[in-house]
Image 1 (cartoon, helix red, strand yellow):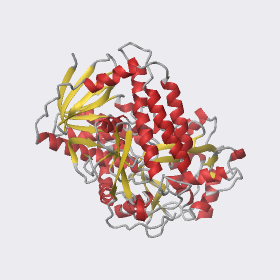
Image 2: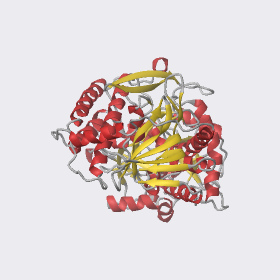
Image 3: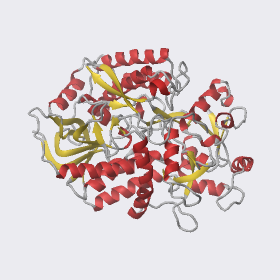
Image 4: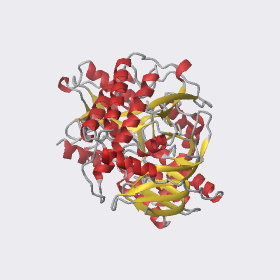
Length: 597
C-alpha cells in the first residue's frame, strides 16, 4: 500500500527556483519540497558568473536598460510585460539575497561588486555596463546554499531522493503528485492544493552539454503526458565557451574580466561579428561566430575549437586597444593574482581537466548545449497556461528553467537565469500559497497510482531487444549534429524521422535490475523516455519555424521573419504525434528592430 502525504503546497525540485518558492510559500502555507536530489546538489550550484540587477554600484544603470537588453537579447521574442516585471524586481531580489546572508563579492566601499556581462549595456552609449552581481565565480552555489539554509530555518519539509513520475489532475484541477522513493522503491502519493514544478532544464538530450546528469526534463515531460502543452522548445541556448569535448562551462565572467576569443590564426575574431561590444555580445551571436570561424578553417590547428585567452598581458593589450578603463577612470590593467582571485573555480577546472593554467595558457573552448529557453508555459506569477488564450490550470505552477514565462524568448542573456529563478520562484511560491489558502483539497482519482505503475511495468516488461544506453547515445549525437548551433530543413527532417524511430525502439527496452532499493537503472531509463519526448518536440518545433531568430539558426532561412514568426510555439503530444499551435508575443515599449552589438 502506498504512503500518502498531505500538504498545502508541494514543490517538485530543490534547486534555486524550488527553494525560492519554498521560502515564500512556507511563510503562509504548509509546504514540502520533493526532489530527486539533495537540494544542495542541484544544478543551480553550477551557475558561475553572476545575477543581473541594475544596482548602479559603479556607474549609472537603470532597470529599464536591463529590460531593453533582455528584449534585444531575446531577439524580440520575449514577452515584454514579463521582462519588465523581472528586471524591476531583480534589484530588490538581489538585496533580499544579501539580507538572507549571501556572501557577495564587494567593492572597496562595501557595496555588492558588479562586473560586465555579455549583452548588458549602457543604452545611451552602447558600451558594456557593470550589472552582474557576483560571489567570485560561485554565485549559483552561494544562492543555493543561502536559500537552503533559509528553508531549513523556516522548517520546510524535504523529501529528498524522491522521483516525481506523475501529476495528479482531477477534473482539470491540481490534486498532487506521485513519486517513487529511491531508497525503498515504494510509491508515495503527495496530496496538495498547489503544485509547483521547478525541475530544471533538459540539456542532456545533446551530446556535448554543460548540464548536470539530472537535467532530463522531468517536469516538462510529466506535464506533457497530462495533455498540457510546452512552449518554444526550438529555442535552446548553446553557450560559446565550454571546455573542449567535456562541455563544462567556462563562465562569461572570464570575458567580463577582459578575456578574449582567439582563432587558430591568432586573431581576435569577435570584432568582425560584434564591432561595438566584441567578446561581450549575446551568447547566440558568439556561439555562431565560433562555429563560422571553425567552418572557415580558422579553428586551432584546423580543428573544431578556438581559444579563450585570459592571460594578463593579452587582457591588458586589448583593454588598451578598446579604451577600457577601471571605474575610477584609470587604465584597465590586471595581474595574474587578480584574475585567479576572481575566477578561482575556472582556474581549478582548467587545471584539472585540461592541464591548463588560464593565466599562463589560453583555454581551448567550443560551444556547448547550455540552457532551455522553452518549457512549461506560465504567466509572470508562475501559473501554468494550458492553451493559446492564456487560460491557466487551477493550482499548477512552474518556475525556473523548466518554465517558459517567456522572459528569455529566443536567447537568454547571461545572468538572467539566476534573476529568473529568484524573481519567478518567489512569486510562484506566493501565488501557490494564496491559492492553497482559498481552496480545499481536490479528491484523488480512484486509480491515482496507475499511470506511474504502468510506466514502471513497461520498463520492466519490454522485449529487451534494445539497450537504453545505445538509444541515449544515438539521440544525443543526432541532436548535436542536426539540431545544434546551425540547422537545415534536411537535417531537421532527418532528426524528426530518427527520433520517431528511437521512440518506437524505446518500447523494446527492458531494465535488467529487478531490485527495489536505489534502482538507478529504472530511473535513468525512465528519464531517457522523457528526453526522447522533448527531443522530438524540439526538432518538430525547429522544423516548423522557417526563420532564424536568437538561438534558432536556420542556414536555409537565415533572416529573422517578424511578419510570419513573431509568435510563440505551443506543442502538444497527442497519440505519439506532435501538434503545434501559436500565440502572439507581448510587445509593450520596444518594437522589433535589427540587433546590433
